Image 1 (cartoon, helix red, strand yellow):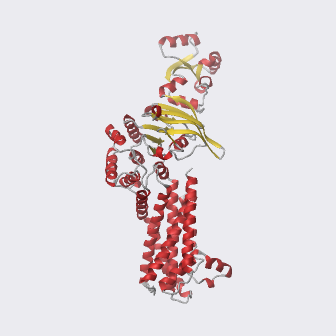
Image 2 (cartoon, each protein chain N blue to C red):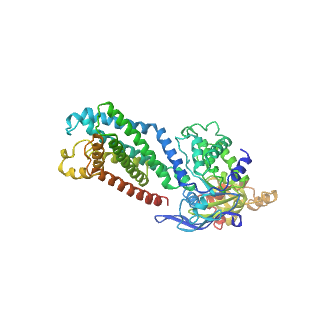
Image 3 (cartoon, chains in turn green, red):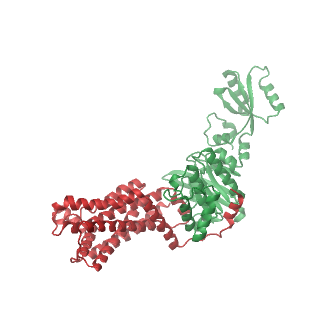
Length: 321
Length: 268
């Protein structure tokens, strides 16, 4: 794999009837890492995955997976990837065992090896007892696990997981997360899409925030948080007049405003000295500020800010991200 | 869940090659047959409906219809053709279901060929139809169907029927690719089975209104019904056999071409 990059895209675009879905997506995913595409519904996450998994030809741009072009060398790509879509790709009327065995046969495993590998994966994914039951009797979490087992059958170099935990209860979600963490320990490259910040934060080495078909920010979870405002001091003020006054006084120094709670946020490292200095500066009479709290920016803040879905604007700090 | 599993996952098997079309076909035919057998509702419908239809025509309408021969001998080939229509609608539904569910994405990402997937459905469709055909024939014999054809004629009748089943199955598969939902496939499948009525399947064509006779005498079901009926009853077949074969081959060719083009189009 060239330069140890497992997935690379340059300027991928895709439109449906004049509606642009991907507006030039650039990604680079190092081999053996977990990369999360984070974005709201309709941001183009699934479309990106479909292009990379060779299911959809882009209008323009280049996509390379495991070093092969996703359009011109799609058979080479398909030998090295697996796709777990948003909807379980299983036959309801076949048992868990039959589903996997069939997939294994389609992946060219000899009959005996297919049965062995099926049994092995079912055991390890805690589906051993359910192996003989039809998938129609499976819970949502069991289906996802079976779906993941199917994706592991062919020993892929690159796995695409499209919203792997959407619609799952917390316990099933936890189980899927552990599985994904174990996979990367074995060197598989994983590109996953998610709307859950917590999921990206926990699983991904790097995160790209996708919005309206383009990557609006990219980096590690911590790096992204830094890009916004790492830590800030939130000050709750005594009344609306004070809120307006301080807002104009602080200008762009204030990174957070919430008029409904009369709160203003200012970048701060959280040390006693900084807090004391800020309080003295803004409230020398000790009459304006009723409460204060040191807060850590969450990935939520990053996401909301970047995708313009924030309710109370912090424009000044975010437009240059 | 230990790491060794995943290490094994990556290194245990050599880089896979594309499976042969042959083994892929066998796997997918097996899948479609298994799904057919387990889809109990539609299987029962596929088996029971033709039998009920036959009993209805023979005992309820048959007395009023004059065909020149015993009505049960006249109507059996027609009932067989209606079975084919029902079977076809099931095929269209299965294909549409596959193409609208997540499984098609997985198959494509696994480099499974579209033609082997569709072929699996078609072969399962032929198998289902042959089963319902057999059942109809057994019941027909039990209620007094006494064909006069010799064994060679029987084989010829079955062969003509099987070819037409193959044709309608491919046609149904193409329908399954065109439509956007299994429900729509169901609806269109219903029209396919309706094609048997304005034909010589249940009543002689000369009893129909003049404007319908032209269509009825020249449509494929009539050719197949006349051929099958003649073979089973041991009467002269004439040119209808060639018409039946030509229709079937034409439908197969057109449907495969259509299915291929549509599948490739949908694939992007």
